[in-house]
Every structure is written in structure tokens, then in C-alpha cells.
Image (cartoon, rainbow, N blue to C red; front, side, top):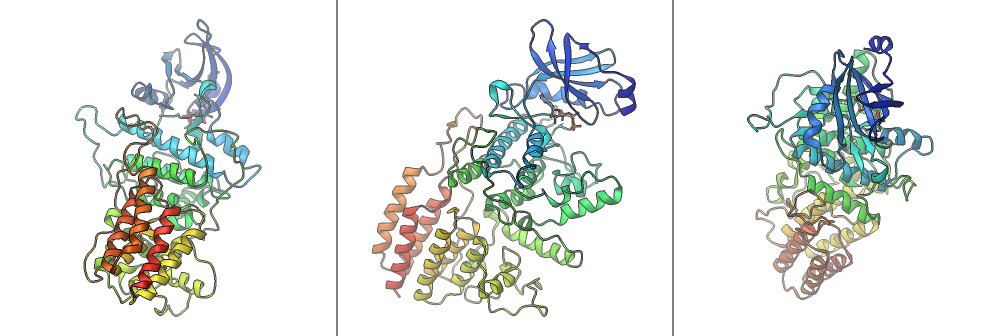
Length: 555
Ligand SMILES: Nc1ncnc2c1ncn2[C@@H]1O[C@H](COP(=O)(O)OP(=O)(O)OP(=O)(O)O)[C@@H](O)[C@H]1O
């Protein structure tokens, strides 16, 4: 192909378009600014020799018609073949995120959180559009996310559908089938999902989501994801090393130091079933909420340069997987992943031993004391952070725990508490941890604390369903006519949440028994679960403080 291009100079005029400066070159062609000689309309013209062995222009042409009119989807102005060239004339767009990234990395080591939230909500929305139209992108990367044309610079556009695929069979209207047969890899080395890249599985919607999650984490990781740092692998060995590193990278390590939503998003996309529709609305909400928490407005507008250029969060020193422990880690990781799953699949408290906590801080550590856990006696109580012994040891040594680890520990202690006085102390500790943390979002570990409280205050011996369940959430501009564009429909409105929390704060003061308090905890959990940010507000903390006081009084 490179030879062919050298033999074949790019034309000056093609399909009534004067070919101007080169915008970029890809795997199998190049792209130019071009002007229509009749209308003077400027476009981006993708040129590829017609006998190109990998005719991505031709593939791409098949997807444009289905994508027309979708927000952030380029308009196709002309396409066809002329002489030895295959051409596509599409909207002339702005800079790619890759080009912005390269410039930015000269000045700082990670992106600012506002911009990453913008990219998250826009790319989720773009994927929703593509998937709704039956198309997988299959090559999510920074170079394929491009700032819009001059009249629409705050929108991120998706480009490059050369690897895309219809996942809904146009004839049968059914999802394409999965297969256990490993397939040749199509996609990019950096962000393609572990399943597709390292295991040769058939791509589906979940893999576009995972690629996006990895791309977002990359932007917040100094130096980028570890496997991207040696450039494109040039040998099979280098590729094997890259795949191994990607496969073994644990979400909790990749996302250390980031708001929990990034880790949750990555785990979520990896747990989706082959044919499952991703819950785009939920993840839009999660990233809108994250932006809200940090006070960023209008994040459906990508503004560059960013109004908040300073990095706010970044991944902190993710340890490299060691080959010695990788197998055991893989097993533990698998178990931990099972445990972390989507809220509906979580282990419920009723099936755990209530007062016996085998994973408690007092549990013996392994010989070497490295906290690289031997498998705990009861796999049901594997710590969500996968290194609870280590965390507990660190906590005893006065080292600050992460919010997640601290809450997980509190849940365990509540499960082990045997009187009201201990419970009241733990509720106060819960309030302290939540208030000290910048994010007031009640994460799954926070809900585990409420679950434990609910159970202990109610009947510790009975089965209860977890308080955090899949929730009806507001939806942000999902293109569905029946939905409010501002996302006001569904879920708990802010006013409704305030009113309910205020009332719960009053009720808790008058509760006459632990059982009544348990009901109020359940109500509290459900209000937070249904609210758009899952955040604990001032009234929420009022309720929790009232709860601690009441538990103590009833002791
Ligand atoms: N419509 C456009 N407007 C402006 N720039 C564009 C446009 N399309 C592509 N580019 C620029 O050209 C680069 C290559 O484009 P594109 O990814 O579509 O080509 P490709 O040949 O399919 O590339 P690859 O082989 O890398 O996937 C992009 O990263 C972007 O910088």
C-alpha cells in the first residue's frame, strides 16, 4: 500500500473537489481539506486507492447512511470512485482529541476532570446513537474523537468507521451470534477491550464501552495506561507483553486515586453479557453527577482550552502486576469481580455470617505479612479492595485508608457489632468518613454500610435485599422523544429528595425501637439510591447524625 501511494500521486481535483492541504493519514489512505468547485463548500476528503487490500473507505461508506442526522456524526457529502481513487467527502471537523492530548502532555501529565467528564458524556451519547442504529464502532481511540466543525466546536464527533460493524443482522434483525472460536483482532492496541484484544472474542456493544472506559482512564493517568508507554508493538513478543499487561491490569489499580465512577464503569462494561444493551442513561447520569459534585457546569459542552485547566484527579502509582503472584491474583481478582458485580447481583447480607467476621482486622495474616492474601476462609467476604488485610494493617499503623476501603471496613465492623453503643459509634464514623471525603456520593461500599446497619437494626438473622438496586434514573438527552432533554424525568427530583430527607430527619428523632430505625435506614437508602447523584446532602447527614443519637438513646 505504501508503495502504491508513492507510485500514485494524490490528485488535485476529484469528484468536483479541489484537493487542498493534508489533514492526516491513516492505515490505508489520507485525508485532505477539499473545496467543492461549484458550491465552494469545504469538506474533509478521504482518499484511498481502489485496489487497496484493506478498503476501509468502502467499508465506511456502508455505515454513513445509517448514521446521518445523529448528533456528533459527520455528514457524508459525497462518496464513490473516480479513476484509481475511492473517495469520501465528509464534514470538515476540528482537532482530534489525540492532537489535543499530544499538545497538552507537553504542559501537564493528565487532563483536567471537567474535560474528561465532557468526553465521557459525549462519547457515551455517541455510542448510544451508533448502537441504537445497529452499529459497533470497534475502534474507539482519541484519534477517532474529533472536535466539531466551526459552527459546532463544543460537540465531539466520532469518525473513522472503517472497522465498524452492524451487530444487528439487517435481514434477520437479530443480534449477531457469539462464538467461542478465537478471531483475528480488529481494533487498536491501546483501548480495545481485553475480551476482544486478548481473548479473540466477537466484539459487541460492551466492548465499545470498555474501550471508552480505558480511554478515559488513560487521560487521567500520568504517562498514560502502562501498556501504551512503549509505543506500537513491533514484534509478536512485544505484542504478547502488551496483551499480558493489559489482561492483568486490575481495575482498582488502573483507577487508584480516581473518583470511584471510573472503576465502576470499567468493571460494569466488563461484566455485560454479549448481547446486553449497556445502560447508557445510567452512565450519563453518573458522569453528570460527578461533574456536579465538582461544580462543573454545562459538561455536555466540550470547551477547549478547558475553563478549569489544572488537573484535579489523577491515577496514583498503580503497581505493575508481578508474574510471581499473577495466577493467584487472577483467581482472587475473579472472585472480587464476582463480588463487585452489578448491584443486583451482589451477595446479600442475609447470606453472610452476621456476628462472625472472618475477614475482620483480627484475622491472622499470611506468614510473610505482605497482605497478599491467602484466600480468605469464606469467599463471600472477600474484601472489595482485594487487600483488606493490608488495608486493615495500614489503618492500624495510622495510614489513611481510601474512602472505599474505609467504608468496606466499617460495613464489616457493623456486621460484627453486638450492641447499640457500638453501632452508634460506627454510624458517627460513617458520617465522618463521608464528610471528610470530597465526593459525597454514596458508592457501593457506602450502601454496604447501610445494608449492614439495616440488618443489624432490624432482625440480624433474616434475609434482606440490598438497598442499592438498579434504579430508575433521569436521562440526559438520549434522543428519545418522550424524555426530557434536561434529564428531569424519572428518578428522584432534588426537591423530592430534600423533602424526604428532611422528613426522615424528623422521624428518626421520634423512633421508638431498633426495628423502626431499620425501616428509616431502608427509606434513607432508597431515597439516595433513586436520587440522580446518589450524594449525601446536608439533610442526609442530619438524618445520619440523628440516627446515631437515637441508636445510642435506645441502647
Ligand atoms: N472529517 C475530518 N475533519 C478533520 N480532520 C479529520 C477528519 N477526519 C479525519 N481527520 C483527521 O485525520 C486523521 C485520520 O483520519 P481517519 O482516522 O478517519 O483515517 P484512517 O485512514 O481511517 O485512520 P486510521 O488508519 O488511523 O484509523 C484523524 O485522526 C483526524 O486527525
